Length: 116
Length: 113
Image (cartoon, rainbow over all chains, first blue to last red; front, side):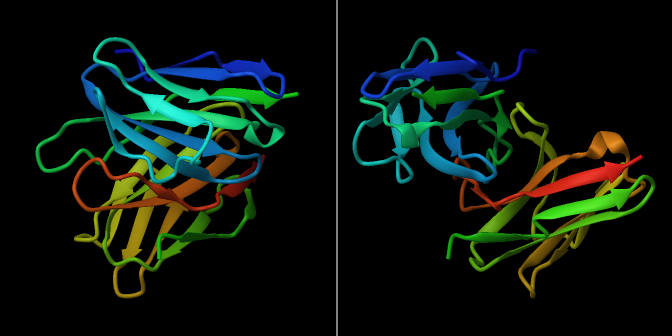
């Protein structure tokens, strides 16, 4: 049973370009979360999605960032017009739908974005 | 308050010793407390988790102690090994399923051989 998959693992973009990060949840998982981790810091929640729905985007910056989880295919985190401050590791986590709660989140290996 | 505090920031332990990492929270609505282990360049891996209806949970060498009245919980690693050297994050979540996690800032553990 494959774990959470993310690609690319490393992404280099120049300032002003767009970054697209992809996440495929574990088989059978219907909830996807995106977190951002700056160097030497903990993970900060960005957005929570279910298929075709954004459930909670309270951690997303108001501009340039967007996320989707289409009916078919991976979840995408999109960053437009990247700036150096966007350089970070972006982690996707997925969670199963369990009776009484889907608490456990399983993380992918992350995408390390470097903006030059 | 959504913040989760974690200490110490870094910890050095001799092989065979006990590693103890502490976390504290303010929001009494939190009802799920996992610990994650992260190696450099890797994603966080779920280590062990606890709900507030129990005061302790043990899995192998890892134990969570939970003090609901003090709003504190801690991770104990018994017989620490060099392979345990990693960054450990506590987290908290609340409400019904699907809520996001609030993470502590992390503790970098080094176990000396």
